[in-house]
Amino acid sequence: MAKDAAKQDVTDAELAVMEVLWDAAGPGAVVREIREKLYPRGGAAHHSTVQKLLERLEAKGYVRRETGELAHRFFATVPRDELIGRRVRAIADELCGGSMATLLTGLVRSQPLKPAEIRELREIIDRAERSRKQK
Image 1 (spheres, rainbow, N blue to C red):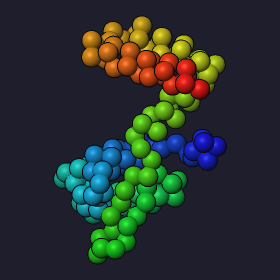
Image 2 (image 1 turned 135 degrees about the horizontal axis):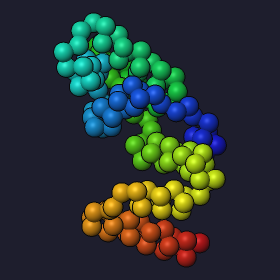
Image 3 (image 1 turned 120 degrees about the vertical axis):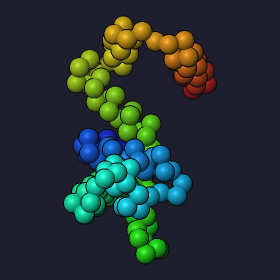
Image 4 (image 1 turned 60 degrees about the horizontal axis):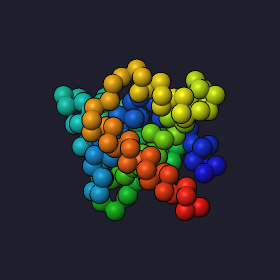
């Protein structure tokens, strides 16, 4: 966990690339496919931008490159849930003195939840309670 906590955060532009890679999942994606998703009418400059973003993400440990093909294929190495969790924890630390309860309460009070969201939260809380009782 210490290694994960030390990972640099991603910029908004890098996050857009990660979204494409998460959606691509198993097969990953080549630079051209990512560029087409992010910049449908983009040209060489956008292609270079995507390449640079992938290089940065690879250096940060968020992306891996597979070089077996003519065009390199890229894969997300950090699951979406992990990045969300890390960012939410950072927000709780910054705004709520580290209290997830305060953060979650503030979120729920600021925006009413849909019935499906309430059910999902109840299931998560139930699983957390069962897990805690088993320990």
